[in-house]
Image (cartoon, rainbow, N blue to C red; front, side, top):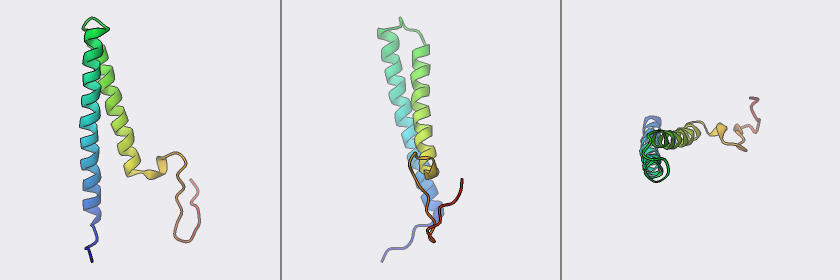
Length: 87
């Protein structure tokens, strides 16, 4: 029988996943921006900033969904009594 996980550990794991997701998505966005800047836009800086921002925004949206699952489209929150809370 395993010991139940504390709420602090659950929140800590979610923050760790959010930080890792932010680093990966911002890094991919940065890389895409550098490639686009060099190939398409004659070494301008705005494609790098734009694509990095897109990556960070996608990571923020994913993190928001992990902390607040009610924001996922089509999700219904049902209480134990079966009542659906009014938003």
